[in-house]
Image (cartoon, rainbow, N blue to C red; front, side, top):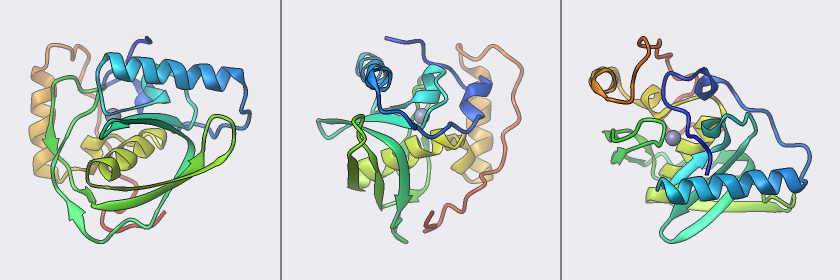
Length: 180
Ligand SMILES: [Zn+2]
């Protein structure tokens, strides 16, 4: 169980580095991420959220617990979903966030073997949300300006939010059917 960093912490907006060594330390990181996610509990957790700047995340969706190292998203569907989304770095806050309905994530497992995960609905949302974390992009960056404003207000009123309001940057990525 590791401490989860909260919105406002610069580690959350810093892009993470690719994993190059698939060693015991990486497997310990995946274990720590999984334990911390399950304890929270949450549907996903990315390494920067526990202050580790590596491209690794874990997920727990539809009773499947998994992890992905060095993920690359592709085949984002033009069809969108618009459900509510949450994040362990924004405790208690859930806001609508547009995402592709389907996506394919390619990467590796903690032993370095290639892995392909095809997701729709919640799993697709999770794969996009967690991969964004590795690019220093947060779900509030993906919202339309009106929704973002509502969320900033809720953040300022949240008990856990102590510091001065950080600047919210515009997303560097197209959110509509982008393939990257
Ligand atoms: Zn998150």
